[in-house]
Length: 396
Image (cartoon, rainbow, N blue to C red; front, side, top):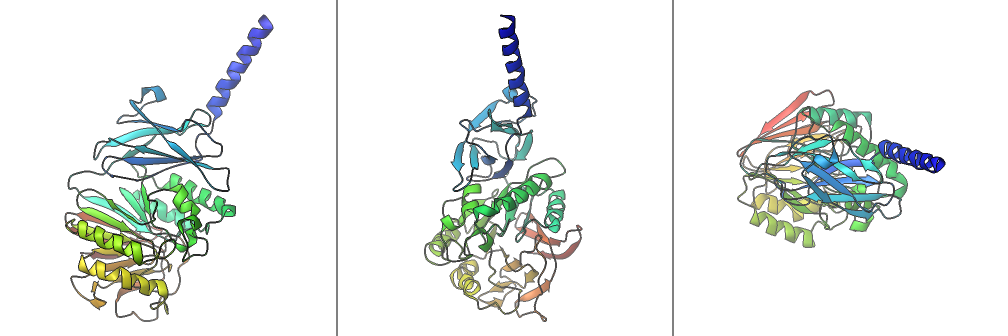
């Protein structure tokens, strides 16, 4: 009897020890699948299947899971070709402009440390966000993450070519390093996680261009923002972002252009309208202005940007810095759209043209991220380098 009790005690202690040592989720990050004021999607990954992915959350910090007033169960997705499960937990019924604390995980793998986020406000307020693309896992990528987070942005717009895995299962370690960096560095000084809204790029896609959603498995299975790959997000009452696919897993014309026309017409009264995509309409890299996807963007999207007076297009792809003059109808127009790019959030800068083109206000071979402040109908854009130096500014 004593031996049996001892065995039970040892097994019990071992179970407690294993539970205490459970590493928790492999990654935890935030995005949106719906209303940014009343929902938040918490995403976490595990290396084994689980039956009970869950997020415990509430408006106050707690030490024990049982103390959180709310919990939401998630839905796991098996990543094709890998022993990797991605769990999406959409928190709904949240209060606008409210801080929430949470822990994510499951009983088998354990839970994350406590994190926090803030929903977007439902009334007009000043908003700050960051945007850029073409990152990979360079030391400069993480330096720019740290600089971006130090400015306390409320969200990040990421314009493609994040981990450079090219849709290959053999490159999952690239995504692990990228997500580890995001988790470590993209946290504000106040401790808030920074939700991301992402556009697909050629380095998310097997073959780069002309593919289908299944050719970009990480983009669609790690984030699940929208099944089509193009969508819009309302960020408070004064901001909307149209997230587009510049020919990687959807044609630029056809259904995507038709959707964009209807969406821009429907939302034309929102004060600040931005677009996020990978391949620029107005590139700063030499010799590519008439390439198929650059000219395709100008053909299918440019007239809509002009008609509905897009405030700014956030462009990427060429690993350079660029700010255009305000443009409308492929001409300089003081009331036109400014195009900011061209994706150099970590990747080594490429050379720009020897002389400015007719549409360019400023270009440089320089790593950077864009810091954007919105106040009412005024927007202030600042380009920041890995040392935190602001080297360009614009307002419209």
